[in-house]
Image 1 (cartoon, helix red, strand yellow):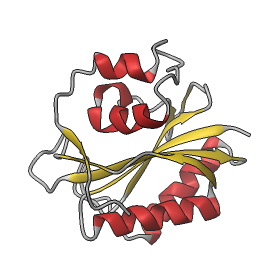
Image 2: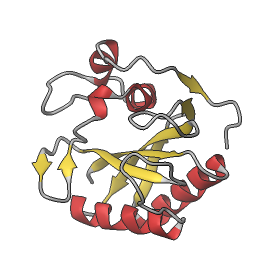
Image 3: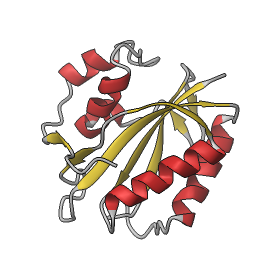
Image 4: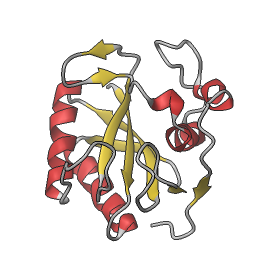
Length: 163
């Protein structure tokens, strides 16, 4: 069964509740959550004039294809109230596919591995917690190595109010 790595994030409303609801729905509709990182808090990246984000990485075993995963997580985002108003804008929930086994795929709707993951400390730190030796199939470095050379210097802190 393929292993899928997802990044959950959000910076509006009850952030921990939205992460919890996303995890529960992912477990019901995408697959079995094998591992979940701690929740981390980070200042907004890209568009910085907005509230801080909470982020978490999940490892999920799934029988869904990458396209089915994308369709399902987009529906979960919609059902939880995500509105896509601006690129990198504030949101109640965001769910990104980071890896799907060692698949390398680029289509109009989906790029796997996530094209920005190696540039984002808020992605690499929780991913490192659960899969430090996971190899990036394009960059040929593992998560520990990518974290070490990550150009992003935003502080990523474990969130104290864990769900």
